[in-house]
Image: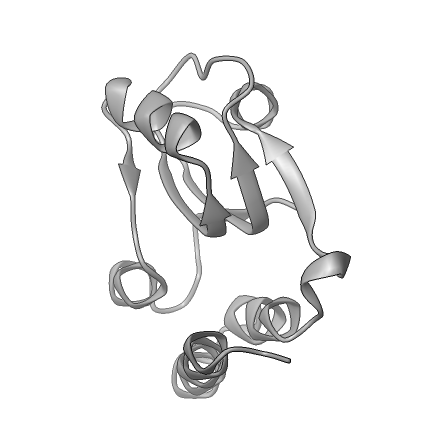
Length: 115
């Protein structure tokens, strides 16, 4: 069963996709409504390998704290471990909500979608 928080997030993402002609938000809403067993996990060291300094990163799954991230990023994910969050913020990065992400990047340009 999908939680009310996830359902509201998916509605916000679909609305942003329609209003801003940004298919990335519709794709993210689709990922949000999938069962949790279908979601992936990703370690911070892998995020570090796939991104560069100051990237805005979206991961539709859980971010785990294995390894280190060599640079600063802004991250939105469906779930994040405490150790991963602290490693990202220690490097000067930020963890943001889906609403902040949409507000900062209404069209989704410059957003790196991992997964």
